[in-house]
Length: 443
Ligand code: H79
View 1 (cartoon, rainbow, N blue to C red):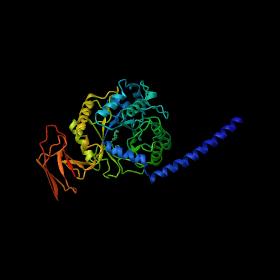
View 2: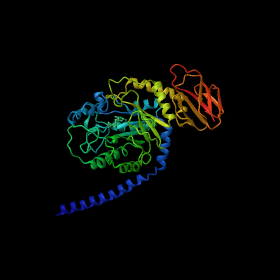
View 3: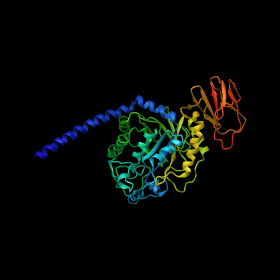
């Protein structure tokens, strides 16, 4: 009898709690449709736009196979096969201090790391499921915790990439465009996947790691027409950390509650990749791209971009009013390969000289073109000459009066003439392997 009464009381408590949380989440969900970013969030957006350059890191149990982060899908592996991978993941060389120091040496202001990719494997200590690094690998530690602590120590911001697409969890059902028969049952609880599993993990990520700069979502394109309970998830994030920026890589126009618009392997609005939207919103913008051709560690990929190519990519992003999030895929032993390290150092060295024309700027007054782009900050317009061989460069009209033109590299004067229909610059010859000739116009 006694037992019965207690359990009835418990049931009532649970029911009341359920109703309460339903009302609260309903309220919060509605709140996102007329989302007003908090003052802290708006400040974070400013910071983000000033930061300009971030390090993207794809690292997971897939790294063991050295064939990219899609290997589970590309080889059509079964769950039983893929479940063996964590046993071989033992990154004894992982050192958070080295990773953070590398990003800083490259002139980067933030790191965005895969907390879990499409394989659903949590690279952090998650209590929501044991499909995680602490429970399943010989390593048994939480690298995201070490990275978060070190990022805070060294003063660099940390974002968590989080895949909404899941090739492992049976509750990711009905499955999406990338599904294959890997041994999952043909049923599952979609609501539980979103509300318990995903939101549960996001709650962990935004509770246990100190201030997190934001969540970078990916994979919604796998089920573009599904109800992703976005309002609820976004409200949860903004409730736990109001300044955290929500950056969704869903390839669609931004939805209520989102803080940054990101473009995969494309400048905003260009859609050379074929899956990005051409709509460019008023939100802060970001382009993500790779330092070689891969996201996750790929042993056969040696198509590394040169430092000059990366510098130009960064400059073109800035000229398009966007950040560059540049990706590396560290090795399964926790080391970052030398080819990445040397290039990142070279870009950092370049930024130590040219950073003034990148950090804290916004897209300039002249439309980006093949010859180059402009950025601007207070009374300065930075003309970035990226691809122009002639002595004279004729720019479109600039509304303000230009008082002087100087080379950023050595402060020497650049001849110019301003007319109603344009500005003509007399350029110095480009030096060998010079990524960018920057002319500073004072208005
Ligand atoms: O994490 C990295 C990649 O693993 C992931 N995003 C970056 C940051 C990524 N997955 N896929 N892609 C990038 C390419 C996109 C492919 C798509 Fe499609 C083409 C998405 C929609 C059309 C193929 C067809 C997949 C879904 C439908």
